[in-house]
Image 1: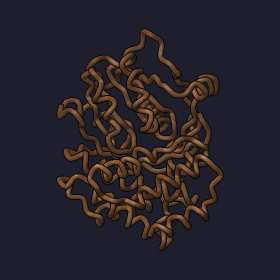
Image 2: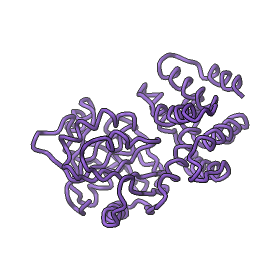
Image 3: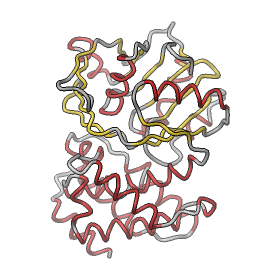
Length: 322
């Protein structure tokens, strides 16, 4: 990524909007892609973002599309959409990006880069594992809740210049950034966080900090972690204790915050459960390992999103598993 060159930002949800605002405040040229409905609204009314340092939201104009014009081709791309969209994005990216473009994934989940790696293009894929938290109040209005820490690492490359350019940009826009040579371990640990706090908040309606305060839900968190450790690659040497410590730290940092999965359930949007607990279930099946709690969380979150499923019943079903 070359500093001050145009960047294609795909996704203007809560995190995408915060990234957009931080980038344009540092004079980066940003072109955005989002849904047709959101793009029409943002072109008409702009996009409002309130960072943690703002007294009130700042209104930005935004060059935004649902489908890019034919002559638009980028060398640099940041993706902040829900990770389940990646398999549908890859065909568009082959039109929108140069053959050796840089792609930075600000997304949750395991193996989410696979659709891009399967492309014939020689894209350089970098993952960002972040505790940046934000709340989307409206389709064109987001609030940054906390900055937290962000770790970056190459997935299919070890290019020092590439990583340093990304580091420079993200540091310049005010994020707390660190390069991690073992980004896969960070990905698994963050996945464990999203696979516990996320679905449990979606099922119960509780804010992040309240999950660990409840003795039953706290026990569920620890049991889900234990299942994830069984499935994780042995070379990562993950332990339940270090994962729980990370979850506890993030839950405390975002105690009054609604998880993105709870926000999705409340807005009747598709959640990332398939790339979180769903991927854990699939990996466990391949290894012949039973992960009943992860499987139950996938089932319950899908039920809640598909029908008027009472949270009390969801908690009862969780109790039946453990």
